[in-house]
Length: 356
Image (cartoon, rainbow, N blue to C red):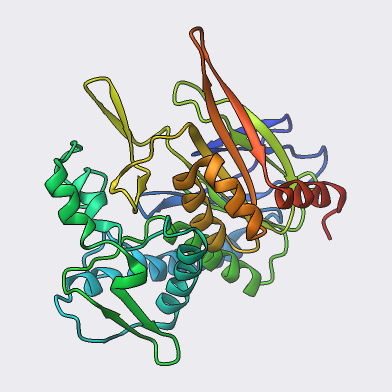
């Protein structure tokens, strides 16, 4: 679906975890927008250059082809995708995989090691067990035996071997399965952005389910203004506005996808080292990086760790991260932010550097 144009006044467009603030200047040409469904969520693309007719059709076709390719490789909701076929391969024999799949796994392995195992693509059995997966019947609190049984199938460092030189992947248990939902949206954004760049576009925004990349100048001719949402399920308020260009942004939050049983809140953010939802006070983590794939993976890993444990990890690896914690008292819930040195440096540098 294609949507053209913005109001001449400031307009707020809500996305999951983001509030994108776009203000068109008087007399400036209207941007062209594309949106649609992908990966169980929505994608949104904004091209600052106005397009018409054949150009619109060409861009739309390129976007849809790129997203179809990503889904065909990484979607756990598509039984014919490459990851689903690997999951169905009930053997520990080596399997040949595509180079894009291998490249994604290399990033996943990098973040898995650096985050002390908190990012883990073999988390699928636990995701299904707690009711947050593609084939889950219902959200429920499993018993301890079920959790331990699922934990035996989790641990990408010990249960997967990837040979990058030969693009070959091996399970060390036939029942190991992968869930790429914590990194695939980022890969989709990067794929679409690459297609737009190949078509000659320089000023654009690509967003899938809240993970986004901006290039060049925004509709005002200056940096893109990205509002980070306060992690409050009851409202849509902006916690902080970033002025950025040529940057990938990903946020992971615990406040949209959860269930409650007997007064206890269970988030979809699961800790691979415990087999259970996280219990700390960190509600969301935003990461800035060069690629959305990397930002997506790190945002998930740091949310699992929480601000107290995650901030030192992020500092050690030079990750630009912003943590937002819930601060509860008897009257109301307030929020406290903690940012890494890399986040402060990057946002200050981006705010001071005009788009090219």
